[in-house]
Amino acid sequence: MLSALSWLALEAKYLDRAREFYETHLDLAAVDDRDGAVAFDVGDATLVLREPGDVPRGGVHTHYALATPPDRYDAWYDRLAASFDLTEFDFGGTRSLYFYDPDGNCVEIGSCGRGGAPISDVFEIALEVEDLSRAESFYRALGFEVTDRGDERRRVRLGGPVALELWEPQLGIADARGGVHVDVGFAADDPEAVVDAVADRACEIETGDEWARVRDPDGHFLTVQ
Image (cartoon, rainbow, N blue to C red):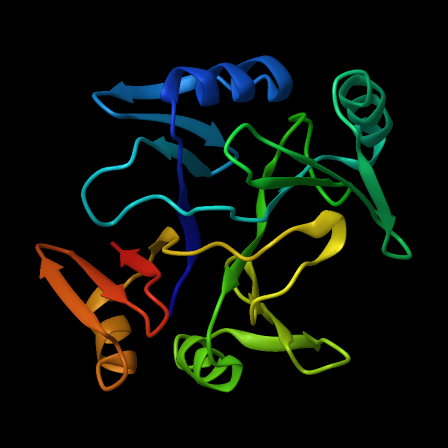
Protein backbone atom coordinates (compact mmCIF):
# COMPACT_ATOMS: atom_id res chain seq x y z
CA MET A 1 0.00 0.00 0.00
CA LEU A 2 2.82 2.39 0.95
CA SER A 3 5.79 1.76 -1.29
CA ALA A 4 8.56 4.04 0.04
CA LEU A 5 9.40 6.73 2.56
CA SER A 6 9.39 10.15 0.88
CA TRP A 7 10.23 12.51 3.75
CA LEU A 8 10.56 13.05 7.46
CA ALA A 9 10.00 16.59 8.73
CA LEU A 10 11.52 17.94 11.96
CA GLU A 11 10.77 21.24 13.65
CA ALA A 12 13.75 23.58 14.07
CA LYS A 13 13.50 26.53 16.45
CA TYR A 14 16.37 28.30 14.68
CA LEU A 15 16.67 27.11 11.11
CA ASP A 16 20.19 28.41 10.48
CA ARG A 17 21.50 26.59 13.56
CA ALA A 18 19.79 23.33 12.58
CA ARG A 19 20.99 23.57 9.00
CA GLU A 20 24.58 24.13 10.12
CA PHE A 21 24.39 21.07 12.38
CA TYR A 22 23.30 18.72 9.60
CA GLU A 23 25.71 20.17 7.06
CA THR A 24 28.69 20.20 9.41
CA HIS A 25 28.29 16.95 11.33
CA LEU A 26 26.50 14.71 8.81
CA ASP A 27 27.78 16.22 5.54
CA LEU A 28 24.25 16.62 4.19
CA ALA A 29 23.78 19.11 1.37
CA ALA A 30 20.65 21.21 1.05
CA VAL A 31 18.61 20.43 -2.06
CA ASP A 32 15.68 22.76 -1.37
CA ASP A 33 15.86 26.00 0.61
CA ARG A 34 12.74 28.09 0.92
CA ASP A 35 11.31 30.55 3.43
CA GLY A 36 11.10 28.76 6.77
CA ALA A 37 12.33 25.33 5.62
CA VAL A 38 15.34 23.50 4.27
CA ALA A 39 15.52 19.96 2.84
CA PHE A 40 18.35 17.43 2.53
CA ASP A 41 18.47 14.29 0.42
CA VAL A 42 19.06 11.15 2.49
CA GLY A 43 19.12 8.27 0.04
CA ASP A 44 15.77 8.17 -1.73
CA ALA A 45 14.05 10.15 1.04
CA THR A 46 14.24 13.77 2.17
CA LEU A 47 14.94 15.15 5.63
CA VAL A 48 13.05 18.43 6.04
CA LEU A 49 13.75 21.03 8.74
CA ARG A 50 10.95 23.54 9.36
CA GLU A 51 10.58 26.56 11.55
CA PRO A 52 7.45 26.51 13.76
CA GLY A 53 4.50 27.52 11.63
CA ASP A 54 1.48 26.14 9.86
CA VAL A 55 0.19 22.60 10.29
CA PRO A 56 1.56 20.10 9.53
CA ARG A 57 4.53 21.09 11.67
CA GLY A 58 7.71 19.12 11.84
CA GLY A 59 8.13 16.59 14.63
CA VAL A 60 9.38 17.60 18.08
CA HIS A 61 11.95 15.54 20.07
CA THR A 62 11.76 12.86 17.39
CA HIS A 63 14.03 9.83 17.56
CA TYR A 64 14.94 8.65 14.07
CA ALA A 65 17.68 6.49 12.56
CA LEU A 66 20.02 6.91 9.61
CA ALA A 67 21.79 3.98 7.98
CA THR A 68 25.47 3.83 7.12
CA PRO A 69 27.33 0.90 5.50
CA PRO A 70 29.05 -1.34 8.08
CA ASP A 71 32.53 -0.40 6.84
CA ARG A 72 31.83 3.30 7.47
CA TYR A 73 30.41 2.99 10.96
CA ASP A 74 33.70 3.23 12.89
CA ALA A 75 34.67 6.38 10.99
CA TRP A 76 31.36 8.00 11.95
CA TYR A 77 31.88 7.00 15.56
CA ASP A 78 35.39 8.43 15.74
CA ARG A 79 34.37 11.64 14.02
CA LEU A 80 31.26 12.32 16.11
CA ALA A 81 32.86 11.28 19.42
CA ALA A 82 35.12 14.32 19.11
CA SER A 83 32.09 16.63 19.41
CA PHE A 84 29.36 14.64 21.18
CA ASP A 85 28.87 12.40 24.17
CA LEU A 86 27.79 9.35 22.20
CA THR A 87 25.73 6.40 23.38
CA GLU A 88 26.40 3.12 21.58
CA PHE A 89 24.29 -0.03 21.47
CA ASP A 90 25.07 -3.43 19.95
CA PHE A 91 22.00 -5.16 18.52
CA GLY A 92 23.86 -8.42 17.90
CA GLY A 93 24.87 -8.03 14.29
CA THR A 94 24.54 -4.28 13.88
CA ARG A 95 25.74 -1.38 16.01
CA SER A 96 24.21 2.03 16.47
CA LEU A 97 25.42 5.31 17.90
CA TYR A 98 23.11 7.99 19.31
CA PHE A 99 23.51 11.74 19.75
CA TYR A 100 21.31 14.84 19.75
CA ASP A 101 20.73 17.68 17.33
CA PRO A 102 20.26 21.28 18.58
CA ASP A 103 16.46 20.85 18.79
CA GLY A 104 16.51 17.75 20.98
CA ASN A 105 15.96 15.15 18.26
CA CYS A 106 17.82 11.92 18.98
CA VAL A 107 19.77 10.98 15.86
CA GLU A 108 20.83 7.36 15.46
CA ILE A 109 23.36 6.11 12.94
CA GLY A 110 23.13 2.35 12.45
CA SER A 111 25.55 0.05 10.65
CA CYS A 112 22.87 -1.45 8.42
CA GLY A 113 23.26 0.64 5.28
CA ARG A 114 23.94 -0.59 1.77
CA GLY A 115 25.80 0.97 -1.10
CA GLY A 116 28.62 3.46 -1.03
CA ALA A 117 26.96 6.57 0.38
CA PRO A 118 28.11 7.56 3.89
CA ILE A 119 24.46 7.98 4.89
CA SER A 120 22.24 5.74 2.78
CA ASP A 121 18.70 6.24 4.10
CA VAL A 122 16.31 6.83 6.98
CA PHE A 123 15.44 3.37 8.31
CA GLU A 124 13.50 4.06 11.52
CA ILE A 125 11.17 6.68 13.01
CA ALA A 126 9.78 6.62 16.56
CA LEU A 127 6.31 8.06 17.15
CA GLU A 128 4.86 8.80 20.57
CA VAL A 129 1.33 7.45 20.93
CA GLU A 130 -1.28 7.61 23.67
CA ASP A 131 -2.87 4.19 23.12
CA LEU A 132 -0.51 1.55 21.75
CA SER A 133 -3.15 -0.92 20.58
CA ARG A 134 -5.07 1.84 18.79
CA ALA A 135 -1.92 3.10 17.05
CA GLU A 136 -0.84 -0.41 16.10
CA SER A 137 -4.25 -1.11 14.55
CA PHE A 138 -4.10 2.13 12.56
CA TYR A 139 -0.70 1.43 11.01
CA ARG A 140 -1.36 -2.25 10.41
CA ALA A 141 -4.35 -1.16 8.33
CA LEU A 142 -1.81 0.67 6.15
CA GLY A 143 0.20 -2.52 5.58
CA PHE A 144 2.79 -2.32 8.39
CA GLU A 145 3.55 -5.59 10.18
CA VAL A 146 4.66 -6.21 13.76
CA THR A 147 8.31 -7.26 14.00
CA ASP A 148 9.01 -6.78 17.72
CA ARG A 149 7.32 -5.86 21.00
CA GLY A 150 8.75 -4.32 24.14
CA ASP A 151 8.90 -6.45 27.28
CA GLU A 152 6.33 -4.28 29.05
CA ARG A 153 4.08 -4.03 25.98
CA ARG A 154 4.53 -0.25 25.88
CA ARG A 155 6.41 -0.33 22.59
CA VAL A 156 5.90 -2.06 19.27
CA ARG A 157 8.08 -2.09 16.17
CA LEU A 158 6.42 -2.26 12.78
CA GLY A 159 8.06 -3.15 9.49
CA GLY A 160 7.15 -1.36 6.27
CA PRO A 161 8.71 1.17 3.88
CA VAL A 162 10.42 2.46 7.04
CA ALA A 163 10.51 0.83 10.48
CA LEU A 164 8.04 2.56 12.78
CA GLU A 165 8.58 2.40 16.53
CA LEU A 166 5.32 3.18 18.32
CA TRP A 167 6.03 4.20 21.91
CA GLU A 168 3.75 5.14 24.72
CA PRO A 169 5.46 8.06 26.55
CA GLN A 170 8.82 6.75 27.77
CA LEU A 171 12.58 7.09 27.42
CA GLY A 172 14.40 4.74 25.08
CA ILE A 173 18.08 4.12 24.40
CA ALA A 174 20.07 7.32 25.03
CA ASP A 175 16.92 8.72 26.69
CA ALA A 176 15.33 9.13 23.27
CA ARG A 177 11.62 9.90 23.00
CA GLY A 178 9.07 9.27 20.31
CA GLY A 179 8.22 12.36 18.30
CA VAL A 180 5.03 14.36 18.63
CA HIS A 181 3.07 15.82 15.67
CA VAL A 182 5.52 14.17 13.26
CA ASP A 183 4.99 14.80 9.54
CA VAL A 184 5.96 11.83 7.37
CA GLY A 185 5.55 11.45 3.61
CA PHE A 186 5.16 8.19 1.69
CA ALA A 187 4.96 7.14 -1.93
CA ALA A 188 1.84 5.15 -2.80
CA ASP A 189 0.43 3.83 -6.06
CA ASP A 190 -3.12 4.55 -4.91
CA PRO A 191 -3.47 7.38 -2.34
CA GLU A 192 -7.25 6.94 -2.35
CA ALA A 193 -6.87 3.34 -1.17
CA VAL A 194 -4.64 4.54 1.69
CA VAL A 195 -7.35 6.95 2.82
CA ASP A 196 -10.03 4.30 2.56
CA ALA A 197 -8.03 1.92 4.75
CA VAL A 198 -8.08 4.30 7.74
CA ALA A 199 -10.97 6.66 7.00
CA ASP A 200 -13.00 5.35 9.93
CA ARG A 201 -10.28 6.13 12.48
CA ALA A 202 -8.38 9.13 11.08
CA CYS A 203 -8.80 12.47 12.85
CA GLU A 204 -8.56 14.47 9.64
CA ILE A 205 -8.34 13.77 5.91
CA GLU A 206 -7.32 16.16 3.15
CA THR A 207 -7.10 15.22 -0.52
CA GLY A 208 -5.82 16.80 -3.71
CA ASP A 209 -4.82 15.80 -7.21
CA GLU A 210 -2.89 12.53 -6.81
CA TRP A 211 -2.15 13.07 -3.12
CA ALA A 212 -3.82 12.69 0.26
CA ARG A 213 -2.99 13.64 3.84
CA VAL A 214 -4.23 11.77 6.89
CA ARG A 215 -3.92 12.80 10.54
CA ASP A 216 -3.70 9.77 12.81
CA PRO A 217 -5.36 9.52 16.26
CA ASP A 218 -2.18 10.83 17.94
CA GLY A 219 -1.81 13.91 15.74
CA HIS A 220 0.86 12.60 13.37
CA PHE A 221 0.46 13.50 9.68
CA LEU A 222 0.94 11.03 6.84
CA THR A 223 1.01 12.43 3.34
CA VAL A 224 0.86 10.00 0.42
CA GLN A 225 1.40 10.77 -3.25
